[in-house]
Every structure is written in structure tokens, then in C-alpha cells.
Amino acid sequence: MARIVMKFGGTSVADLDRIKNVARHVKREVDAGHEVAVVVSAMSGKTNELVGWVQNTPKVAGADHSIYDAREYDAVVASGEQVTSGLLAIALQAMGINARSWQGWQIPIRTDNAHGAARILEIDGGEMVRRMQEGQVAVVAGFQGLGPDNRVSTLGRGGSDTSAVAIAAAVKADRCDIYTDVDGVYTTDPRIEPKARRLKKIAFEEMLEMASLGAKVLQVRSVELAMVFKVRTFVRSSFEDPDAPGMGDLLNPPGTLICDEEEIVEQEVVTGIAYAKDEAQISLRRLADRPGVSAAIFGPLAESHINVDMIVQNISEDGSKTDMTFTVPSGDVEKALRVLGENKDKIGYDVIQNESGLVKVSVIGIGMRSHAGVAATAFRALAEKGINIKAITTSEIKISILIDGPYAELAVRTLHSCYGLDKS
Ligand code: ADP
Ligand code: ASP
Ligand code: MG
Image 1 (cartoon, protein in one colour):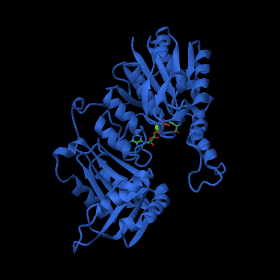
Image 2 (cartoon, rainbow, N blue to C red):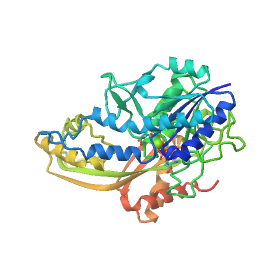
Image 3 (cartoon, helix red, strand yellow):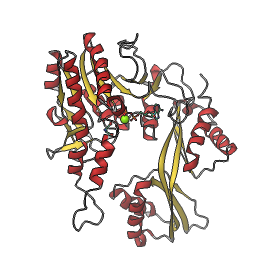
Image 4 (cartoon, rainbow, N blue to C red):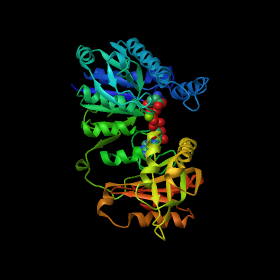
């Protein structure tokens, strides 16, 4: 007997038939004698709809740019998961399985106060575990928790993955299965490159890079938690026949295992390609080249919660003036320009330029640590396709390249094939 956490994403619970199908996956594990907690997302599209409603509410009188109360945003957007957790509990009961739903506040899943992007601080799973030991399936609403202000909080988009891994860590589950609409983690997004291959295993560090560089198959924070708490996490499909052979295999279920790099026997140099759309570039021209200028730029941006990503500073030709270019999410450009405008005197630049609709494509692989020439291969392949590179950043296990938006898919496929990822 084992203890298993099963998470089902939005497409897996998109309607009542799919919820019934999810119940069959759960039944399989219950029938095998396991203790089961299930974490569900909202029906696909639901959270977008709820977010849209909040964004279209009237602005607070007198407010210039803060649009709505983040605590009420959470109260609204957390509701999608409340619905699916209840519906799945009902579907399980209809199959004769003892089950109940749990909202984040009922467990409770305690988070910090960052409404809209809260972090889980603590989960008191005692009562839930007691009931699981009595044979009751816990159906937990993902994405939500309880803030220190005693208000409902949400964990940021894609946050149900994090709910699942955090619960698996808290209840010391033997396994956490993330069921989604693909049957594992692929060498790149299979929607962009049909030749992408499913990986049997991927190292935590690589999955962390893939997720933070745009592969939304797992929320970044869920991978961090899996790595820190050593949660055995699999990504697998909810669309396969729940009763097909091997689906209930305890040690080797179908799908991709996220694991320590030591567990991977044949490590490739490059493991995968990720991309992130909607990047924007901002350039400050003819800045004074003096100590403190970076702090004067990025301090106020950070205080305004603007996530700056790639940063490129030119070496000054004459020692007095330089240029600084960096990227932010397209949605933050206006805010960033306003903040930089307000701080123009302190920073001391000549003009600001900006460009939206850019894409960052990234090459990821632990094998890069010990192999030279990985970056040169990418640059050559992109050049052959006439794709211009606007900025580059590298770390030990990744190379990120900023390009024009319309070239995104071509660039992903080009990089995917130049490292032979399309060949098994
Ligand atoms: P869920 O609703 O189940 O949480 P998501 O839409 O958040 O599902 O994540 C699954 C999607 O992630 C897939 O449909 C796929 O298009 C996308 N994806 C992006 N990169 C990858 C990758 N490297 N491997 C697998 N899926 C990926
Ligand atoms: N429903 C939430 C979202 O769409 C959380 C999740 O699906 O993981 O972001
Ligand atoms: Mg998701």
C-alpha cells in the first residue's frame, strides 16, 4: 500500500464526462489499496474567465493605476477550483468511493500575504491524513490557500501543480502524479514541434529551467518544492484509458519522472528547448557610465514589482556614456516606462526606446556544463534560417536568445533539430 497524490489540470476536468474519467483514474488507485489525495484545477478556460471579470470591474474612485483589491481577486478566481473539487467528490461517491472535497482554508494550506501570487508556508495535513487512513479520498481544490489575514489566497497561474507537490510533501506521499493533456515532459512543446520526444526522466535542475523559461507543463514553484522535499513526481496523461495495462504500476508508471540527475544514466548534452512569448525590450541610451547607475534603474523597477529578465550593458567607448538594454514581460512595459520616466533625473539617460512582441527561446541541458560549442551551434543554426538575435544570456545549463516574435516557432524547431532532439 502506498500514499499517492494525483493532480488533474484544467483540460482533464473540463466537463462532467472528463471528471468521470478522472474518477476512474482515482478508482484504479483506490482499488489497488492506496491512500489517495486528489488535487484539481478549475475547468479549462474558467480561471481566464474569472480573471477577465475582475479586470473589467470599475476602478476604485481616485486610483490612478492600481485597479482592484487583490484579496477580492483571489476570492473570485479561487472559485473555479471549488466547483471542480465538489464535482469530483460527487463523481467518486457515485462510483461507491468514500470521498470529500477540501478547500484550501479547510485543511488549512497556509500561505504568505502576496495575494494573487502567494507562496505556501505550511500545510497542516493531520486531519486529512487521518481520514485518508480511514479510506476516504481527499479531493483538494488546487491553486488556493489561506493568507495570514485569514483571507483566501491564490498561488499564481498554474498554481495547482504547486498545491499538489506541497500536499505530497506535507503528507509524505510516496508519489505525486501530475495528470495533464500530454503524456509527459517533451524535448519541447509538442504543440509547436510534433517531432518532440517524450523524456523518460528529466533532472530537477533542467525541469526548473524549462519551467521558468516558458514550458508551462509545470509551475516553477512546484519543481522547486519537489526538488527540496524530494517528492517523486511524474507528469502523465489523463487521457489514456485509466485501466490500460501498466497504468497502475507503482514504481514505474507511464510518463516522465522528475528526479535527481544521478538517476539519469544517459545524459544528453541538450535536454530541451523552451520558449516564452510576450517579452519586451527596453533600452536606455547614453546613460552616464558611473557607479550606482544600475541600482538607480533596477531599484525602482523592483519596487514596482516589475520582473526584469535579460540585462545587457554595453562597454562604454569613451568611459562616460553607455547603453543599457533589458527585457520585461510585454504587459509591464507601460508601467516600466512610467517608473523610468519618473526617475529620469536620478538615472540620467538621454532617450528610452522599447519594442514589444519579442520571444525568448532557450536551450537547456545539464550536459552543457562539460561540453563546449553548444552556444555556437545554436547561433549558426539560427543564422542559417535568417533569424536575427537581439540579446543573449547564458548560465551553466542554459542559453537564452531573444528574437522577433514571428520567428518563434521556426526558432524552436531549428534549435530542436540542430541538437538532434527529433531523433530517438
Ligand atoms: P494543465 O491544465 O493540465 O495544468 P497546462 O496547459 O498547464 O496543463 O500544461 C500542459 C501543456 O504544456 C501541454 O499541453 C503543452 O502544450 C505545454 N508544454 C510546453 N512545453 C512542454 C514540454 N516541454 N513538454 C510537455 N508539454 C509542454
Ligand atoms: N486554475 C488555475 C490557472 O488556470 C490554476 C491551475 O490550473 O493550475 O492558472
Ligand atoms: Mg498547468
